[in-house]
Length: 384
Ligand SMILES: *Cc1c(COP(=O)(O)O)cnc(C)c1O
Image (tube, rainbow, N blue to C red):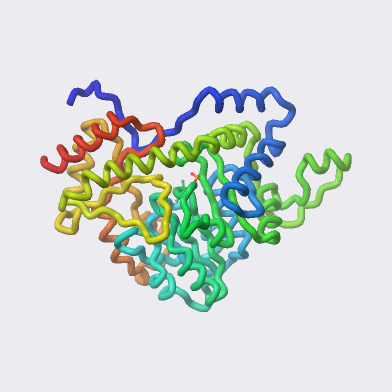
């Protein structure tokens, strides 16, 4: 293969002329932030995910922080979370003075294990953060039951799972709060952006306050009232998102269905080839689940070790295939090594999976030719 072959990233955004026109229209309007396009995007997401309250914020990380705040996490509280995720899923607990407690994942799916969650509960546990790893929903039926039995809040980190469902319901219909990210590698993008969904009016109110410094009226409302008065009632942040970002996200949301179908096709093609090769041990789909295919995770079989993964990674990068590893278990990071009790950690499935995974290119505008080039490169790198 020649070095002139173009690089295929593991993920990338797609922005078309409709998206550009939508953004330009907002730039020429009166409101650049916290205006009608933010509200429109929030309504569109609520409708799609079948919940009542949506708050768009500046990032997926801000959305997680809002959710952890909304359910009342504070100093000394324990929150159970999966280690196989981006650091933000656990950092948000630390922002509020809480303690992340890592539960193991199920080997087959790499989703948080309900049994491991149960084992991790103590009298200080206040919430569970489930991560819809790679794009399939966690076992929200069991997690909901466990949380109800122990009076815990359930937060879904749905940064990977826009469009996923479980037994016909969206993750937002099971969890107390769900959070989304619109970073360019995700299903739809606003550049940077995030959103929190909830059916709980009290949580929704707390999230709205938290987004805007803890001030209890936004500037449009003040404008209407013609009043100079505003009340800062608690400590919040500036987690607002601009109208042109939300116009982009709303325009992108209209294309989600088509992109999801394309992602499912690509995953089916990868499965068709790699599912018959005993060097691989593919992840399985949970029953009742509809997968949103954010990532395609190729896992080597147990007979292989981390050095084989490294060798394939290097070979694929050389062939200009943008493979990646999702994720380094969070507790491996230096900060967590220094700040989280390592002795209490017991995540053998997360460890075993982490050593043998590679994420292959997967995005809604990948062509058949690109998919085949990835497949050829994987087979080539495996044989080396
Ligand atoms: C992308 C991502 C986030 C963070 O979202 P940002 O918008 O980048 O802040 C959080 N959790 C998971 C699982 C993610 O993939």
